[in-house]
Image 1 (cartoon, rainbow, N blue to C red):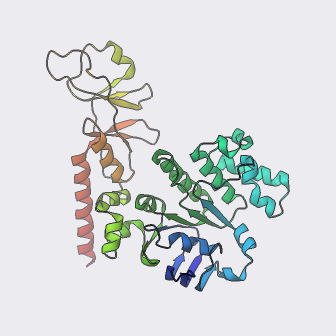
Image 2: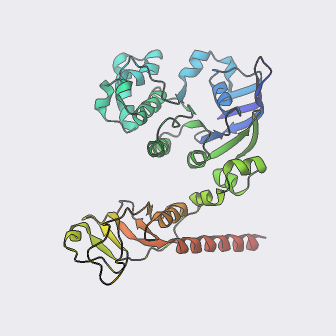
Length: 371
C-alpha cells in the first residue's frame, strides 16, 4: 500500500505543485493519476521514490515512511517507467534490463538470465536482447522499459506517462500488455497520464487532479464517469462520458443474428454483386470485409470489391465494443466474433441500444426493489 498523508510540495518560487494530498493506493492494484498539464500528478508520483522531496506531510510505502529510507535503496525496490523508456543507449537490451539486479548485487549470469525471462514476459523475442535501443521500435523500447522496471521484482511500480510517445495502435497494445502483466504479477502500480481514455481503461481507481495540485475526485472508472464530483471533472472526462461508460457494461445480453456470408475464394467466380450486404470470410471463418449489394438489376460483378468491415466485437465483452463495431461498419451491422476471432453473427446499433435500455430498466427496477 502507498499512502499520502497531508502531502504538500511547494517550490522555492512559491509555486504549489501538490496541495495537501490525502490518498491511499491499495496493494496489488493499478491507480491512475490523471489531469491537465501542471496539475501535480507527476510530482506526486516522483515523491514516492524521493526523486522529489515533499515540503510537508508523509508518504508511506507498506507502512514505512520513505524519508527514513536511503533514496538509492528505496529506488531499487520501486520500479520506474518513464516516457520514451529512458534506456541506456550504449548498452544492449539484455544489459539494460539487467541493470537493477546488478546494482543489487546479483551475479552477471543470474541478472542476464532474469533479463531474458522478462523479455519473454513482456512479449519480446529473445534475439532482441543482443540489440541496442536505437535498433528497436518505440513500442519495443517501452516494453524493454517495463521489463527493466520489473527486473528486481519490486512490489511497487511507478509509471510516468509511459505510453504517450508511441502511436495510438501501439499504445493500445501496450495498455493491453500492462493489464495482462498485472493479472500475472499483482503489483502495486501508480500510473500517470493526461488521457482520460487511458485512465479509465487501465485504472482500477482514478485520481483526478486540477491546477494547483488539488485532488478533486478519487473513484473507480465507472463511478467517475457516472457521477463526476464537480464541473471540472465533468468537463475533463468529456461530454461523451456516457459512451465511455459502456466499457463497463457487460454485453452478455446481446444475441447476434446470422447474415449472408461468402468465402474469399468464391469472389473470383461471382457473376454479379449480391442482393444484400454480404460478409466475406476466409477459410477459417475469420471476417475479411463486406461485399456491397448491387445498386440495380443490371449491375454485374461486385462493384468496388470488398470493403473494410470496421471494428470487430468479441462476444460477451462490454457493450462499447458492440456499438463501435455497428457504427464503424459500412453495412451498419457490427460483426461479432468468438475468442478465436471467428465469425459468430452480427448485431445492429439499434439492438445494442435496446440492450442498454434493458440494462437501465433492470437497474432502475433493482433500485426500486431495494428501496
